[in-house]
Amino acid sequence: MGIKTIGPTTINAKHRLICHCEAVEIELDLPDGVVDARRCDCSFCRRRGAIAGTISENGFRIVKGVDHIKRYQFGTKVAEHFFCDTCGIYTHHRRRSFPNLFGYNLGCLEGVNPFDLGEVPVFDGVNHPSDRPQNNK
Ligand SMILES: [Zn+2]
Image (cartoon, rainbow, N blue to C red; front, top):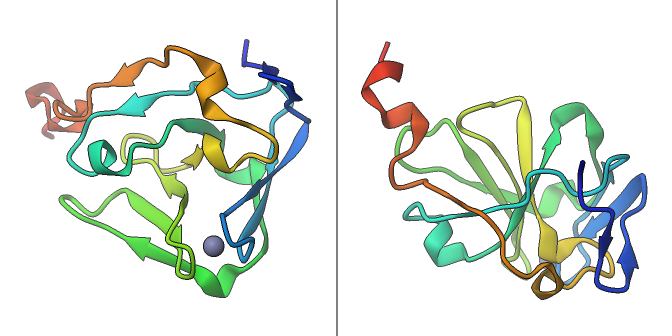
């Protein structure tokens, strides 16, 4: 159900994600390809501009550069946004709705040009599900 081919690139069952300066390298388990690729229009993502895929925490391994990974948080401080401290590129984030899920930067997947995806759904981050009244427990 995921996207297995993006432009000329086949998504491998284990695919590398690399920041721009290559200090940070992450291995992703993507047996179903890229799942749930989306943009988000929240105050942070509209500035960041990246398309994020979704992966469970246990399909995600930092291969190198853990010392270069910096964290940014805002608002409710549930989500954690990570980026390389050398090149500044967003690599991944811990989701707010499902903290055992990570989002990752599709543009950092080895060989992938996100513009080959065409239209990508936009997540309504301005009206985040966690902010809606029925979820205010
Ligand atoms: Zn970097």
